[in-house]
Image 1 (spheres, rainbow, N blue to C red):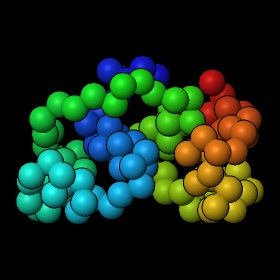
Image 2: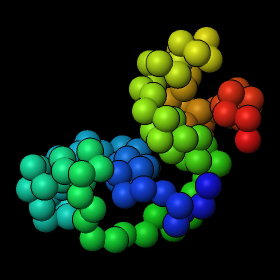
Image 3: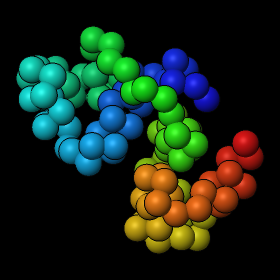
Length: 105
């Protein structure tokens, strides 16, 4: 998956994960209301474009999880790993071999 293939809500999520901020902090940075940001985050509307400047392999798998509608807890159960371990894999701090095997790409 390339950066341009991401849905807007996936871009928002990846951006927040990189910066380790919560949605309301990002809304404030963008100068929009929480309600407007929530519409973007749920995929109901799209906001102004913003670049991510590339996509790491771990973020690719994070986007696949989001696109599949899976929570981290659901994927943890399927992989047999802890929530912390999956979070670290999605942040690029742990090997992603299990994600590669699970998603088959």
